[in-house]
Length: 114
Length: 416
Image 1: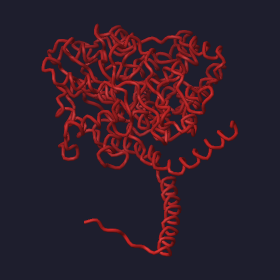
Image 2 (image 1 turned 90 degrees about the horizontal axis):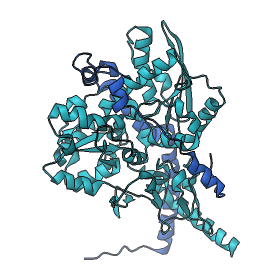
Image 3 (image 1 turned 180 degrees about the vertical axis):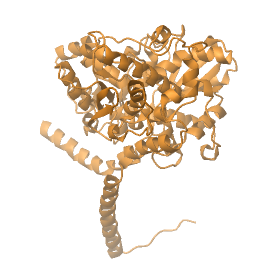
Protein backbone atom coordinates (compact mmCIF):
# COMPACT_ATOMS: atom_id res chain seq x y z
CA UNK A 1 0.00 0.00 0.00
CA UNK A 2 1.30 3.43 -0.89
CA UNK A 3 1.57 5.93 1.92
CA UNK A 4 1.61 9.68 1.37
CA UNK A 5 3.39 11.94 3.78
CA UNK A 6 1.07 14.72 4.88
CA UNK A 7 2.79 17.97 5.75
CA UNK A 8 1.51 21.53 6.22
CA UNK A 9 2.90 24.45 4.26
CA UNK A 10 4.40 25.97 7.40
CA UNK A 11 5.85 22.61 8.40
CA UNK A 12 7.40 22.19 4.98
CA UNK A 13 9.12 25.58 5.15
CA UNK A 14 10.41 24.79 8.63
CA UNK A 15 11.78 21.41 7.63
CA UNK A 16 13.34 22.86 4.48
CA UNK A 17 15.06 25.61 6.45
CA UNK A 18 16.47 23.15 8.95
CA UNK A 19 17.56 20.80 6.19
CA UNK A 20 19.27 23.62 4.29
CA UNK A 21 21.03 24.81 7.43
CA UNK A 22 22.09 21.30 8.27
CA UNK A 23 23.36 20.68 4.78
CA UNK A 24 25.49 23.81 4.77
CA UNK A 25 26.79 23.34 8.30
CA UNK A 26 27.27 19.63 7.86
CA UNK A 27 29.27 20.05 4.67
CA UNK A 28 31.37 22.71 6.32
CA UNK A 29 32.14 20.47 9.29
CA UNK A 30 32.93 17.56 7.01
CA UNK A 31 35.31 19.77 5.04
CA UNK A 32 37.04 20.89 8.21
CA UNK A 33 37.37 17.35 9.48
CA UNK A 34 38.95 16.28 6.19
CA UNK A 35 41.41 19.17 6.26
CA UNK A 36 42.30 18.45 9.87
CA UNK A 37 42.82 14.78 9.23
CA UNK A 38 44.95 13.50 6.37
CA UNK A 39 42.49 13.74 3.56
CA UNK A 40 41.68 10.98 1.16
CA UNK A 41 45.15 10.75 -0.41
CA UNK A 42 46.92 11.04 2.94
CA UNK A 43 44.95 8.08 4.29
CA UNK A 44 46.13 5.90 1.43
CA UNK A 45 49.73 7.09 1.95
CA UNK A 46 49.46 6.30 5.66
CA UNK A 47 48.14 2.84 4.79
CA UNK A 48 51.35 2.13 2.85
CA UNK A 49 53.67 3.44 5.58
CA UNK A 50 51.81 1.51 8.28
CA UNK A 51 52.11 -1.71 6.29
CA UNK A 52 55.83 -1.07 5.75
CA UNK A 53 56.35 -0.62 9.49
CA UNK A 54 54.04 -3.37 10.74
CA UNK A 55 52.99 -5.92 8.13
CA UNK A 56 56.25 -6.60 6.28
CA UNK A 57 58.85 -8.73 8.04
CA UNK A 58 61.70 -7.32 5.96
CA UNK A 59 62.03 -3.66 5.11
CA UNK A 60 65.04 -3.40 2.83
CA UNK A 61 65.08 -4.65 -0.76
CA UNK A 62 68.57 -6.08 -0.38
CA UNK A 63 67.31 -8.36 2.44
CA UNK A 64 64.62 -10.03 0.28
CA UNK A 65 65.66 -13.71 -0.06
CA UNK A 66 64.14 -13.90 -3.56
CA UNK A 67 66.18 -10.86 -4.59
CA UNK A 68 69.30 -12.58 -3.28
CA UNK A 69 68.30 -15.72 -5.14
CA UNK A 70 67.97 -14.06 -8.56
CA UNK A 71 71.32 -12.24 -8.15
CA UNK A 72 73.17 -15.27 -6.74
CA UNK A 73 76.68 -15.10 -8.21
CA UNK A 74 76.80 -18.80 -9.04
CA UNK A 75 73.32 -20.03 -9.82
CA UNK A 76 71.23 -16.86 -10.00
CA UNK A 77 69.20 -16.04 -13.11
CA UNK A 78 70.91 -12.63 -13.13
CA UNK A 79 74.25 -13.88 -11.80
CA UNK A 80 76.25 -10.93 -13.13
CA UNK A 81 74.47 -8.69 -10.61
CA UNK A 82 72.50 -5.43 -10.84
CA UNK A 83 73.34 -3.30 -13.90
CA UNK A 84 75.18 -6.25 -15.48
CA UNK A 85 74.76 -7.46 -19.04
CA UNK A 86 71.67 -9.59 -18.45
CA UNK A 87 70.03 -6.76 -16.51
CA UNK A 88 70.73 -4.37 -19.32
CA UNK A 89 69.02 -6.65 -21.79
CA UNK A 90 65.94 -7.44 -19.69
CA UNK A 91 65.55 -4.71 -17.08
CA UNK A 92 66.89 -1.52 -18.63
CA UNK A 93 65.59 0.58 -21.49
CA UNK A 94 66.17 3.72 -23.52
CA UNK A 95 63.95 6.71 -24.20
CA UNK A 96 62.90 8.61 -27.29
CA UNK A 97 62.81 12.32 -27.97
CA UNK A 98 59.15 12.98 -28.83
CA UNK A 99 59.26 16.75 -28.69
CA UNK A 100 58.48 17.02 -32.41
CA UNK A 101 54.80 16.37 -31.70
CA UNK A 102 54.75 19.24 -29.20
CA UNK A 103 56.53 21.55 -31.64
CA UNK A 104 53.96 20.66 -34.27
CA UNK A 105 51.08 21.46 -31.92
CA UNK A 106 52.60 24.79 -30.95
CA UNK A 107 53.32 25.53 -34.58
CA UNK A 108 49.61 25.05 -35.28
CA UNK A 109 48.83 27.74 -32.73
CA UNK A 110 47.76 25.47 -29.88
CA UNK A 111 48.63 26.87 -26.47
CA UNK A 112 50.04 24.46 -23.87
CA UNK A 113 51.14 25.05 -20.30
CA UNK A 114 54.74 23.78 -20.70
CA UNK B 1 31.14 1.03 -23.64
CA UNK B 2 31.17 -0.42 -20.16
CA UNK B 3 30.86 1.33 -16.81
CA UNK B 4 33.23 0.02 -14.15
CA UNK B 5 33.31 1.52 -10.65
CA UNK B 6 31.62 4.70 -11.93
CA UNK B 7 34.01 5.24 -14.81
CA UNK B 8 33.13 4.54 -18.43
CA UNK B 9 35.52 2.46 -20.54
CA UNK B 10 35.46 1.88 -24.26
CA UNK B 11 36.12 -1.83 -24.38
CA UNK B 12 37.37 -2.45 -27.88
CA UNK B 13 41.13 -3.04 -27.92
CA UNK B 14 41.34 -4.87 -31.21
CA UNK B 15 43.55 -3.67 -33.99
CA UNK B 16 46.05 -1.58 -32.07
CA UNK B 17 49.45 -1.23 -33.63
CA UNK B 18 51.15 1.69 -31.98
CA UNK B 19 50.03 3.03 -28.59
CA UNK B 20 50.57 6.56 -29.90
CA UNK B 21 47.51 5.99 -32.07
CA UNK B 22 45.27 5.22 -29.10
CA UNK B 23 43.31 7.95 -27.34
CA UNK B 24 43.53 6.65 -23.76
CA UNK B 25 41.58 9.50 -22.18
CA UNK B 26 38.56 11.13 -23.80
CA UNK B 27 35.80 13.58 -22.97
CA UNK B 28 32.14 12.78 -23.58
CA UNK B 29 30.73 16.03 -25.00
CA UNK B 30 27.23 15.00 -23.92
CA UNK B 31 28.31 14.99 -20.26
CA UNK B 32 30.89 17.81 -20.20
CA UNK B 33 29.48 20.89 -18.49
CA UNK B 34 32.48 23.07 -19.41
CA UNK B 35 33.24 23.77 -15.73
CA UNK B 36 37.00 23.64 -16.40
CA UNK B 37 37.88 21.62 -13.29
CA UNK B 38 39.89 19.17 -15.42
CA UNK B 39 42.21 21.96 -16.57
CA UNK B 40 43.20 22.63 -12.96
CA UNK B 41 44.56 19.08 -12.77
CA UNK B 42 46.38 18.98 -16.11
CA UNK B 43 50.02 20.08 -15.98
CA UNK B 44 50.60 20.12 -19.73
CA UNK B 45 47.46 21.88 -20.94
CA UNK B 46 46.44 18.86 -23.00
CA UNK B 47 42.80 19.21 -21.93
CA UNK B 48 41.28 22.44 -23.18
CA UNK B 49 38.17 24.00 -24.75
CA UNK B 50 37.40 23.13 -28.33
CA UNK B 51 37.19 25.83 -30.93
CA UNK B 52 33.76 27.46 -30.91
CA UNK B 53 32.74 25.50 -27.84
CA UNK B 54 33.55 25.68 -24.13
CA UNK B 55 33.40 21.90 -23.81
CA UNK B 56 36.80 20.36 -23.16
CA UNK B 57 38.65 17.84 -25.28
CA UNK B 58 41.98 16.04 -24.96
CA UNK B 59 44.86 16.79 -27.33
CA UNK B 60 46.29 13.29 -27.46
CA UNK B 61 49.84 14.25 -28.47
CA UNK B 62 50.24 16.50 -25.42
CA UNK B 63 48.54 14.13 -22.96
CA UNK B 64 50.79 12.13 -20.59
CA UNK B 65 47.81 9.79 -19.82
CA UNK B 66 47.92 10.36 -16.05
CA UNK B 67 44.11 10.57 -15.79
CA UNK B 68 44.04 13.23 -13.08
CA UNK B 69 41.39 15.02 -15.17
CA UNK B 70 39.29 11.87 -15.18
CA UNK B 71 39.31 11.25 -11.44
CA UNK B 72 38.67 14.93 -10.68
CA UNK B 73 35.80 15.51 -13.13
CA UNK B 74 32.69 16.25 -11.04
CA UNK B 75 30.39 15.06 -13.84
CA UNK B 76 31.98 11.76 -14.79
CA UNK B 77 32.36 13.19 -18.30
CA UNK B 78 35.85 11.80 -18.91
CA UNK B 79 36.27 8.17 -19.90
CA UNK B 80 38.98 5.66 -20.70
CA UNK B 81 39.71 4.75 -24.28
CA UNK B 82 40.68 1.10 -23.80
CA UNK B 83 40.00 -1.82 -21.52
CA UNK B 84 41.50 -5.31 -21.59
CA UNK B 85 38.87 -6.79 -19.26
CA UNK B 86 37.04 -8.80 -21.94
CA UNK B 87 40.27 -10.18 -23.36
CA UNK B 88 41.47 -11.22 -19.89
CA UNK B 89 38.16 -12.95 -19.12
CA UNK B 90 38.49 -14.91 -22.37
CA UNK B 91 42.08 -15.90 -21.54
CA UNK B 92 41.08 -17.01 -18.04
CA UNK B 93 38.61 -19.46 -19.59
CA UNK B 94 41.28 -20.93 -21.85
CA UNK B 95 42.90 -23.81 -19.95
CA UNK B 96 45.96 -23.74 -22.23
CA UNK B 97 46.95 -20.25 -21.12
CA UNK B 98 48.76 -19.55 -17.87
CA UNK B 99 47.33 -16.17 -16.90
CA UNK B 100 49.62 -14.36 -14.46
CA UNK B 101 48.66 -11.49 -12.15
CA UNK B 102 51.11 -8.68 -11.45
CA UNK B 103 49.53 -6.05 -9.17
CA UNK B 104 51.27 -2.79 -8.26
CA UNK B 105 51.86 -1.75 -4.65
CA UNK B 106 49.28 1.10 -4.60
CA UNK B 107 46.41 -1.13 -5.78
CA UNK B 108 46.21 -2.83 -2.37
CA UNK B 109 45.72 0.46 -0.51
CA UNK B 110 42.67 1.50 -2.54
CA UNK B 111 40.96 -1.66 -3.83
CA UNK B 112 39.25 -2.11 -0.46
CA UNK B 113 37.30 1.11 -0.99
CA UNK B 114 35.29 -0.60 -3.72
CA UNK B 115 34.22 -3.15 -1.09
CA UNK B 116 33.24 -0.71 1.63
CA UNK B 117 36.55 -0.30 3.47
CA UNK B 118 37.82 3.15 4.50
CA UNK B 119 40.50 4.77 2.31
CA UNK B 120 43.97 3.38 2.91
CA UNK B 121 42.89 -0.04 4.19
CA UNK B 122 45.47 -2.69 3.26
CA UNK B 123 43.77 -5.53 1.36
CA UNK B 124 46.82 -7.19 -0.25
CA UNK B 125 46.05 -10.68 1.07
CA UNK B 126 42.45 -10.58 -0.12
CA UNK B 127 43.55 -9.18 -3.47
CA UNK B 128 45.84 -12.17 -4.12
CA UNK B 129 43.12 -14.54 -2.91
CA UNK B 130 40.57 -12.98 -5.28
CA UNK B 131 42.98 -13.22 -8.22
CA UNK B 132 43.58 -16.91 -7.55
CA UNK B 133 39.85 -17.48 -7.24
CA UNK B 134 39.25 -15.83 -10.61
CA UNK B 135 41.63 -18.35 -12.18
CA UNK B 136 44.95 -16.59 -12.39
CA UNK B 137 47.45 -19.46 -12.40
CA UNK B 138 50.33 -17.61 -10.78
CA UNK B 139 49.92 -14.75 -8.33
CA UNK B 140 53.12 -12.86 -8.92
CA UNK B 141 53.63 -9.43 -7.49
CA UNK B 142 54.95 -6.21 -8.90
CA UNK B 143 56.31 -5.50 -5.42
CA UNK B 144 58.97 -8.17 -6.04
CA UNK B 145 60.29 -6.18 -8.99
CA UNK B 146 59.99 -2.97 -6.96
CA UNK B 147 62.69 -4.57 -4.79
CA UNK B 148 64.60 -5.49 -7.97
CA UNK B 149 64.20 -1.89 -9.19
CA UNK B 150 65.88 -0.67 -6.00
CA UNK B 151 68.82 -3.00 -6.63
CA UNK B 152 69.14 -1.81 -10.24
CA UNK B 153 68.37 1.88 -9.74
CA UNK B 154 70.33 2.11 -6.49
CA UNK B 155 73.37 0.50 -8.14
CA UNK B 156 73.00 2.86 -11.10
CA UNK B 157 72.88 5.85 -8.73
CA UNK B 158 76.01 4.74 -6.91
CA UNK B 159 77.76 4.30 -10.27
CA UNK B 160 76.68 7.77 -11.40
CA UNK B 161 77.80 9.34 -8.11
CA UNK B 162 81.22 7.70 -8.29
CA UNK B 163 81.70 8.48 -11.99
CA UNK B 164 79.28 11.02 -13.47
CA UNK B 165 79.60 11.46 -17.24
CA UNK B 166 77.90 13.33 -20.05
CA UNK B 167 75.96 10.18 -20.96
CA UNK B 168 75.09 9.40 -17.35
CA UNK B 169 74.98 12.72 -15.50
CA UNK B 170 73.68 13.74 -12.08
CA UNK B 171 71.07 14.25 -10.82
CA UNK B 172 69.53 10.89 -11.60
CA UNK B 173 65.76 10.96 -12.03
CA UNK B 174 63.57 8.00 -11.11
CA UNK B 175 61.92 6.22 -14.04
CA UNK B 176 59.06 4.23 -12.46
CA UNK B 177 56.24 6.61 -13.36
CA UNK B 178 54.95 6.30 -16.96
CA UNK B 179 53.29 9.74 -16.95
CA UNK B 180 56.60 11.27 -15.96
CA UNK B 181 58.45 9.36 -18.70
CA UNK B 182 55.92 10.60 -21.27
CA UNK B 183 56.42 14.11 -19.90
CA UNK B 184 60.21 14.01 -20.26
CA UNK B 185 60.11 12.51 -23.74
CA UNK B 186 57.72 15.23 -24.94
CA UNK B 187 58.67 18.32 -22.96
CA UNK B 188 62.22 17.85 -21.62
CA UNK B 189 63.97 15.50 -24.08
CA UNK B 190 67.30 17.18 -23.29
CA UNK B 191 67.04 15.63 -19.80
CA UNK B 192 66.73 12.04 -21.08
CA UNK B 193 70.36 11.30 -20.03
CA UNK B 194 69.36 12.14 -16.45
CA UNK B 195 66.59 9.54 -16.43
CA UNK B 196 67.50 6.25 -14.84
CA UNK B 197 67.74 3.62 -17.57
CA UNK B 198 65.86 1.19 -15.32
CA UNK B 199 62.49 0.06 -16.56
CA UNK B 200 59.67 0.52 -14.12
CA UNK B 201 58.88 -2.39 -11.77
CA UNK B 202 56.19 -3.67 -14.15
CA UNK B 203 58.53 -3.13 -17.09
CA UNK B 204 60.88 -5.55 -15.30
CA UNK B 205 58.29 -8.08 -14.15
CA UNK B 206 56.88 -8.61 -17.66
CA UNK B 207 60.12 -9.91 -19.20
CA UNK B 208 61.13 -11.76 -16.02
CA UNK B 209 57.75 -13.56 -16.02
CA UNK B 210 58.33 -14.89 -19.55
CA UNK B 211 61.98 -15.89 -18.95
CA UNK B 212 62.80 -16.57 -15.29
CA UNK B 213 59.17 -17.28 -14.40
CA UNK B 214 58.72 -19.60 -17.37
CA UNK B 215 61.91 -21.43 -16.36
CA UNK B 216 61.02 -21.88 -12.69
CA UNK B 217 57.41 -22.97 -13.33
CA UNK B 218 58.32 -25.03 -16.40
CA UNK B 219 55.76 -23.20 -18.49
CA UNK B 220 56.30 -22.35 -22.14
CA UNK B 221 56.73 -18.58 -22.37
CA UNK B 222 54.29 -18.32 -25.28
CA UNK B 223 51.60 -19.88 -23.06
CA UNK B 224 52.07 -17.19 -20.40
CA UNK B 225 49.68 -14.23 -20.51
CA UNK B 226 50.86 -11.42 -18.24
CA UNK B 227 48.32 -9.06 -16.66
CA UNK B 228 49.61 -5.83 -15.20
CA UNK B 229 47.23 -4.43 -12.54
CA UNK B 230 47.91 -0.77 -11.90
CA UNK B 231 46.55 2.31 -10.11
CA UNK B 232 47.20 4.09 -13.37
CA UNK B 233 46.07 4.81 -16.93
CA UNK B 234 49.52 5.69 -18.31
CA UNK B 235 50.66 2.13 -17.48
CA UNK B 236 48.36 0.96 -20.30
CA UNK B 237 50.45 3.05 -22.66
CA UNK B 238 53.68 1.77 -21.11
CA UNK B 239 52.60 -1.86 -21.44
CA UNK B 240 51.94 -1.32 -25.15
CA UNK B 241 55.23 0.47 -25.89
CA UNK B 242 56.68 -1.25 -28.95
CA UNK B 243 60.10 -1.74 -27.31
CA UNK B 244 58.64 -3.79 -24.43
CA UNK B 245 59.53 -7.19 -25.86
CA UNK B 246 62.83 -8.10 -24.20
CA UNK B 247 61.59 -11.63 -23.45
CA UNK B 248 61.12 -12.33 -27.15
CA UNK B 249 57.35 -11.98 -26.71
CA UNK B 250 55.14 -9.08 -25.67
CA UNK B 251 56.41 -8.61 -22.10
CA UNK B 252 53.07 -7.27 -20.87
CA UNK B 253 49.99 -8.69 -22.55
CA UNK B 254 47.31 -6.69 -20.77
CA UNK B 255 47.04 -3.79 -18.36
CA UNK B 256 44.03 -2.99 -16.21
CA UNK B 257 43.63 -0.62 -13.30
CA UNK B 258 42.27 -0.92 -9.76
CA UNK B 259 38.74 0.02 -10.85
CA UNK B 260 38.66 -2.69 -13.51
CA UNK B 261 39.99 -5.26 -11.02
CA UNK B 262 37.23 -4.33 -8.54
CA UNK B 263 34.68 -4.69 -11.34
CA UNK B 264 36.03 -8.13 -12.31
CA UNK B 265 35.96 -9.37 -8.70
CA UNK B 266 32.34 -8.23 -8.31
CA UNK B 267 31.33 -9.66 -11.67
CA UNK B 268 32.84 -13.02 -10.71
CA UNK B 269 30.50 -13.05 -7.72
CA UNK B 270 33.36 -13.26 -5.23
CA UNK B 271 32.58 -12.23 -1.65
CA UNK B 272 35.78 -10.20 -1.32
CA UNK B 273 35.48 -9.31 2.35
CA UNK B 274 35.15 -12.90 3.54
CA UNK B 275 38.17 -14.19 1.58
CA UNK B 276 41.01 -15.56 3.69
CA UNK B 277 44.31 -13.72 3.04
CA UNK B 278 46.59 -15.35 0.47
CA UNK B 279 50.28 -14.88 -0.20
CA UNK B 280 51.70 -14.33 -3.69
CA UNK B 281 53.84 -17.12 -5.18
CA UNK B 282 57.29 -16.40 -3.72
CA UNK B 283 59.78 -16.67 -6.60
CA UNK B 284 58.39 -13.62 -8.39
CA UNK B 285 56.17 -12.46 -5.56
CA UNK B 286 58.03 -12.04 -2.27
CA UNK B 287 58.60 -8.44 -1.27
CA UNK B 288 59.68 -6.08 1.50
CA UNK B 289 58.37 -2.90 3.10
CA UNK B 290 60.71 -0.95 0.81
CA UNK B 291 58.65 -2.19 -2.14
CA UNK B 292 55.22 -1.45 -0.75
CA UNK B 293 56.03 2.25 -0.22
CA UNK B 294 56.73 2.66 -3.97
CA UNK B 295 53.13 3.76 -4.30
CA UNK B 296 53.49 6.93 -2.29
CA UNK B 297 55.40 10.14 -3.00
CA UNK B 298 58.83 9.81 -1.39
CA UNK B 299 58.58 6.03 -1.17
CA UNK B 300 60.93 5.14 -4.02
CA UNK B 301 63.43 7.61 -2.58
CA UNK B 302 63.20 6.11 0.90
CA UNK B 303 63.51 2.57 -0.45
CA UNK B 304 66.57 3.55 -2.55
CA UNK B 305 68.19 5.31 0.40
CA UNK B 306 67.79 2.17 2.53
CA UNK B 307 70.07 0.48 0.00
CA UNK B 308 72.39 3.39 -0.85
CA UNK B 309 73.06 4.07 2.84
CA UNK B 310 74.27 0.53 3.45
CA UNK B 311 76.33 0.30 0.26
CA UNK B 312 78.01 3.70 0.64
CA UNK B 313 78.62 3.57 4.40
CA UNK B 314 79.36 -0.18 4.58
CA UNK B 315 77.26 -0.11 7.74
CA UNK B 316 73.88 -1.56 8.61
CA UNK B 317 70.98 0.88 8.66
CA UNK B 318 69.38 0.03 11.99
CA UNK B 319 66.25 2.17 11.70
CA UNK B 320 64.90 1.92 8.15
CA UNK B 321 62.43 4.81 8.56
CA UNK B 322 63.70 7.86 6.65
CA UNK B 323 60.69 10.03 7.37
CA UNK B 324 62.29 13.24 6.11
CA UNK B 325 61.68 12.23 2.48
CA UNK B 326 58.00 11.31 2.95
CA UNK B 327 56.05 13.83 0.94
CA UNK B 328 52.35 14.60 1.09
CA UNK B 329 52.40 17.14 -1.71
CA UNK B 330 54.62 19.58 -3.56
CA UNK B 331 58.43 19.53 -3.59
CA UNK B 332 60.46 18.19 -0.69
CA UNK B 333 64.24 18.30 -0.43
CA UNK B 334 66.59 16.68 2.06
CA UNK B 335 70.25 16.21 2.90
CA UNK B 336 70.96 12.66 4.01
CA UNK B 337 74.22 12.24 5.89
CA UNK B 338 75.85 8.92 5.11
CA UNK B 339 78.86 7.83 7.19
CA UNK B 340 82.09 7.20 5.24
CA UNK B 341 80.57 9.06 2.28
CA UNK B 342 79.19 12.48 3.08
CA UNK B 343 75.88 14.08 2.19
CA UNK B 344 73.45 12.66 -0.35
CA UNK B 345 71.23 15.47 -1.62
CA UNK B 346 67.78 14.42 -2.72
CA UNK B 347 64.52 15.94 -3.95
CA UNK B 348 61.04 14.44 -4.15
CA UNK B 349 58.15 15.92 -6.10
CA UNK B 350 54.70 14.87 -7.18
CA UNK B 351 52.59 16.72 -9.72
CA UNK B 352 54.21 17.62 -13.03
CA UNK B 353 54.04 21.38 -12.43
CA UNK B 354 56.38 20.76 -9.49
CA UNK B 355 58.46 18.38 -11.59
CA UNK B 356 58.88 21.09 -14.24
CA UNK B 357 60.43 23.41 -11.65
CA UNK B 358 63.07 20.79 -10.83
CA UNK B 359 63.59 20.14 -14.56
CA UNK B 360 64.29 23.82 -15.18
CA UNK B 361 66.97 23.76 -12.47
CA UNK B 362 68.63 20.77 -14.10
CA UNK B 363 68.40 22.38 -17.54
CA UNK B 364 70.17 25.49 -16.21
CA UNK B 365 72.86 23.39 -14.54
CA UNK B 366 71.80 24.64 -11.12
CA UNK B 367 70.42 21.43 -9.66
CA UNK B 368 72.33 20.52 -6.49
CA UNK B 369 70.81 17.05 -6.13
CA UNK B 370 72.13 13.53 -6.61
CA UNK B 371 68.75 11.85 -6.93
CA UNK B 372 65.29 13.16 -7.73
CA UNK B 373 62.07 11.16 -7.44
CA UNK B 374 59.14 12.29 -9.58
CA UNK B 375 55.58 10.99 -9.55
CA UNK B 376 52.96 12.50 -11.84
CA UNK B 377 49.94 12.14 -9.56
CA UNK B 378 49.84 14.36 -6.44
CA UNK B 379 50.79 12.19 -3.46
CA UNK B 380 52.01 9.38 -5.73
CA UNK B 381 50.41 6.26 -7.23
CA UNK B 382 47.99 5.91 -4.31
CA UNK B 383 46.22 8.86 -5.97
CA UNK B 384 46.67 7.48 -9.48
CA UNK B 385 44.25 8.04 -12.33
CA UNK B 386 43.21 4.37 -12.26
CA UNK B 387 42.19 4.25 -8.61
CA UNK B 388 38.63 4.12 -7.23
CA UNK B 389 37.12 7.59 -7.15
CA UNK B 390 37.11 9.84 -4.10
CA UNK B 391 33.37 9.82 -3.32
CA UNK B 392 33.47 13.52 -2.38
CA UNK B 393 34.41 14.68 -5.86
CA UNK B 394 31.19 13.71 -7.55
CA UNK B 395 28.92 14.52 -4.57
CA UNK B 396 30.39 18.02 -4.31
CA UNK B 397 29.15 18.53 -7.81
CA UNK B 398 25.66 19.48 -6.60
CA UNK B 399 27.03 22.97 -5.94
CA UNK B 400 29.42 22.95 -8.85
CA UNK B 401 26.60 21.95 -11.13
CA UNK B 402 24.72 25.11 -10.16
CA UNK B 403 27.78 27.30 -10.70
CA UNK B 404 28.58 25.60 -13.96
CA UNK B 405 24.99 26.08 -15.13
CA UNK B 406 25.11 29.80 -14.32
CA UNK B 407 28.48 30.05 -16.00
CA UNK B 408 27.23 28.35 -19.09
CA UNK B 409 24.19 30.63 -19.30
CA UNK B 410 26.46 33.65 -18.83
CA UNK B 411 28.75 32.54 -21.64
CA UNK B 412 25.77 31.93 -23.90
CA UNK B 413 24.29 35.37 -23.15
CA UNK B 414 27.65 37.01 -23.67
CA UNK B 415 27.96 35.42 -27.06
CA UNK B 416 24.27 35.68 -27.85
